[in-house]
Length: 605
Image (cartoon, rainbow, N blue to C red):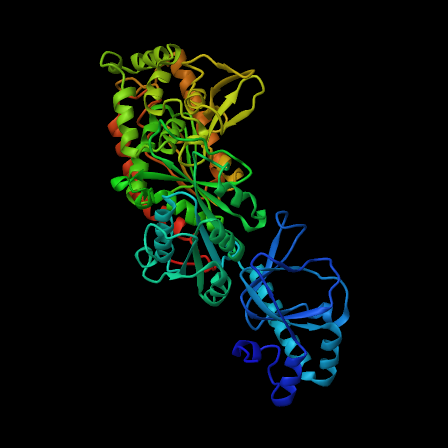
């Protein structure tokens, strides 16, 4: 038997001639498919395994999807099971095949016999165990919190646009300096050739997929298998460590792709890439909590050829991050008209191609958050404020008249009409990315987090300022402005699992010329002015409390503007742009620190 050099250098190092032949003849070959459990924690074992091809994951925990913890990834030349083979007893960890795996297996009696005859074996085992423990201890002390490594990926095409999605994923993986080997496996000819999809693409049949993945997912390289058709998809799903299913969001899980997703164990973290049209009027709901979904928007279909569809770039970024379990959240705070400054900040961040995986909004921030998650660009949101929120010239003349206009708008239900012109009857399950909106229930005194139902209704509850509007009655609750208790909803995003949270706080800066006459002397403010100032101070302290959950806070200079200053749309957008330009490098640096390749190594992409 011709042994890989990495194998002979590990467990069998120092053995030669007849000794090596005798030891090798005591092993029996055994292979495993990707996903197979080779040994399970707690079971009685009496065998040692020497890996000759492929990779395995050693992990501990109560079960595949409960408190699992990866201890190490082992490849050719590594061995496991020596403790049980030496003294019997129960396995202390579970070992599963990451890819197709070939091993040589040595029984306990044979192992114990050979140790007596060849002491070099015991020395080799001790050396490799010491090295493994040192690596595990170093990893446990390391500040690097990168997610579990990925060694092979299957992209199952269950929607014609899935071909385009697969090509986009290959491109974005390479942009992150990832070394990949694309593999095509299909039951029927694809709409494009393997070479057209990728110059390095290998085309194999399903029977050769396992050995191809095992041979190609070595070192810094991992395999990406693109599969189409029931037989090919089943093979790719079985052989690959991670699986993305590109499926029709309209059909949802009641499809072939849905069957695949539901059949994959939770610990392998399958991802449903839900492909849907950009048209806001024809979006399906994508809200099954039993499956990890990434919403992937189809922005264009050239010549009606769905396999050439354009997938939104931000959707591909979110899909890429999901493979690492990485999420970046954006929290938009409240502040009345000052919330318009969010638009300027987002114009800069969108121009820099900065993508967020979740978004949360409070009060005025909820308007912007809802619009962005619905698919509107920041400049389109700015135009909404110009077209819909600037008061008539008569009301724009003074602060008192602008406040009167707000009372008129709130109590006349005019804001709902304005918002529905843009967001229609859109549901939370139909937006581009996970959206959270906060409001306050006066009956229970609790902050309420809206993540389901009609988006516009949630925005109306969140912006319902208690000075200008009456409480909204819904489902036994009495709802007002969410900024009363939580003006910057960073903690909402942190609680839902975002690794980093970037917040835009438009309400924590206060003007120092409050209640002054033209000569700068103090004057007695009106009753409403006093209430609004009191709420501004409350918002400021609320912002400070909840911004502790933020990794980065962007604070536009809005202190010169009052809550009712909706006539100042462009100056407020300019204030947002100014701080956005100043902070964009910090935002990009923060997100770059989260980027890792699929083998868990940091990149500078």
